[in-house]
Length: 339
Ligand code: IMP
Ligand code: ZN
Image (cartoon, rainbow, N blue to C red; front, side, top):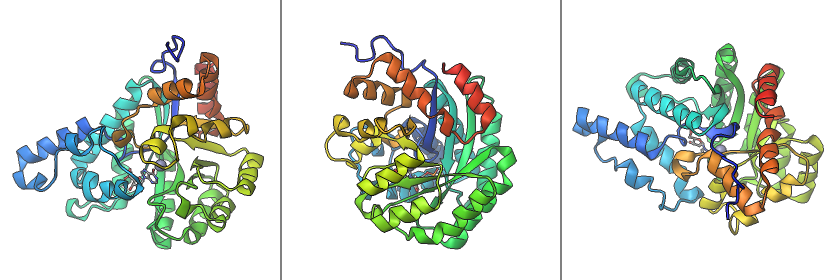
């Protein structure tokens, strides 16, 4: 039986609001970068294994093995202007080819000393790659991420950069990173300044049991985020606040299943709980390069496991329009395009 009843999830216009740039690079693209580094300079890729093996879809990851993949692997491959620009272009192409019409990509400003790239130069590089992509069908905005391991000063620098590059497509600030690390309390002033200056904010929320204490979740909600991501281990009293505020929810089903972040499988995912609450939901990929499930596939899986009719799938795809960070004009365009 066709779970989508003939609906083509790939050609259905979709919005993607939770995609980490470095985690969205396909294994094929990383393999190309790996090969070119090897050809140019055997030492350039010395000790780095082939991405097609490291990121083989059959490989199991959990939250413990997943985060070092960035600092110890993907960042080693994408460590100069050429590879960052090449991989960013490839990520944009992949989302466009999958039928994404509005993309909010997020990335953590990186200092790459050996390539002479400052955090500001990194942001400029990503923004200039986005603007030169000139897609006929997809609008792309950028969110800058604060990593949970950042200091208060580093978080403040991310907000400075987001404000400085606002007129070039930066729309908001995110809090991400290993949920086992950091004290979120220190980011209060950075988020307050972002909001005071009109930036939108989103936060990885209740992603793992360690980052889901009542104290942490209340602290994060006190930052006044516009959207929250994952929303897994949420106590009932906090659920009430989320529902009352009608916060935008970024749900990443395959990521949560693949990394064992929920118990059980798709049918046990908290998507169905949140669907009944009236909070706007957007299905998102999180890290399609590692998870291996494109956004169109997330819609197909959701339809299959929760028995959604095509009409409900379209409704779901539209549900997040009001929560985009790109402003009223973009919202208007999407309302017309996705009706
Ligand atoms: P980047 O910010 O473009 O370099 O993307 C990689 C970064 O995104 C990682 O270092 C993490 O901090 C963050 N990230 C990717 N996936 C997740 C996730 O599932 N939870 C929290 N942070 C994540
Ligand atoms: Zn994420």
